[in-house]
Length: 205
Length: 205
DNA sequence: CGTACTTTTGAATCGCATCAAATCTGGTGG
DNA sequence: CCACCAGATTTGATGCGATTCAAAAGTACG
Image (cartoon, rainbow over all chains, first blue to last red; front, side, top):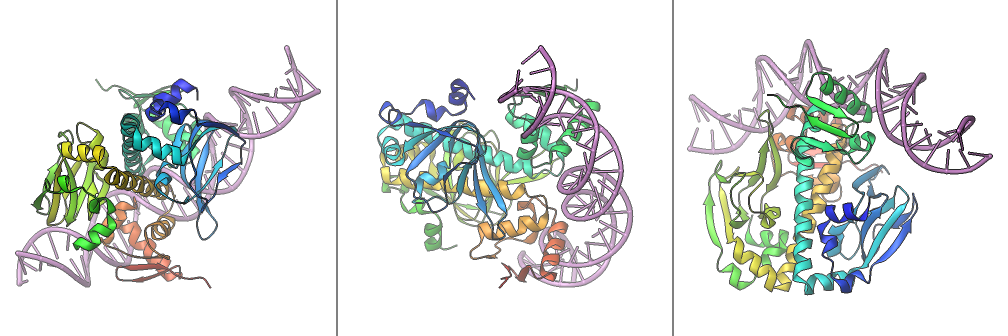
């Protein structure tokens, strides 16, 4: 993800005040690297520049549970109000993150009304986005989830995917096979128009 | 829910500054009453005192999807940054809500650092909760969702349900029949201990 | 008491997960 | 520039589990 796309997807990044921005450190991460673990003190706020990180937790059986996948922008923002992290964070791809000292981040939120506004907007947007996803995952079949996704994440009934279909399938709560087949069906029966990464809902005139 | 419990579950309520608190209006609501609809202008911030409200949306088939259930504390907080609501809100039980003028609410957030802090913590908590639900809905079978629910919403592997099983099923993204059967199976094979509204994960010593 | 809703069970069906395997693709190094 | 490899894409076959439709029993409430 380039810087422009990153800013566009995370307006709060653009409104970081200068005194906080100069404190940011870029950190390269390798696939498999752990950024922090459950119980670690929250001393930093992170933002993904490239690659992918995952917030994970293990249940009592040791099964891994993914809490959040982030390809760009802040992650574990919800931990800013906490003393310690409530999940592990590992990188799944080689990439880079931006690290802001938590103390300075809080201070900036306190002093800069503009930045604070952007941050609260960011949190509110995150809430809405998550609610939309919950709504989507509550749908009982693949076709409905796909259409819902295009309608809520795309524009005018069309979307240009910025991820592999396999990843899209995971986001939709489906196996990749199920997604492929559903797309095929929807294309065959004329519900969807598909061309590479462009997926559009066909107009029923 | 009494006032003490309410405050405990919603620290932001306790930190509402006096000048905002005196502007609050109590409003009685009946079961089935609609507080606002999609597209209505956001002119108030609400908090549940007693009873229950739901944020709902209907898909193209008319199936109801619950976006949020609130038994106490703020709801539709994410709309504070918006001009209009993105969902319907209806009361499912007789009760009461507290209404704050949105403008005064925003002003209070701007002026009172203590209140603002509580509010951001509140938003962050909501984000964490939603992430957990998305994660749960991504699980491909009923048993896993049930266990995940108890582990993330309950305490020490046990939970006392505060809703009907039918409603619980909806929250888990299942039909009620599927939930009943899954509970039965889990009880039969010794995974769960169930007694009325108490559902606990049996200890494997 | 009667009504509406929840809880519970049954049977049939369908869609998705799962396992398997064959292509296709982009990227890497020789 | 080609060979190669890892991962993504695609198709197939199978079984299971959830949905769906149906209906009975239980429960709350006025």
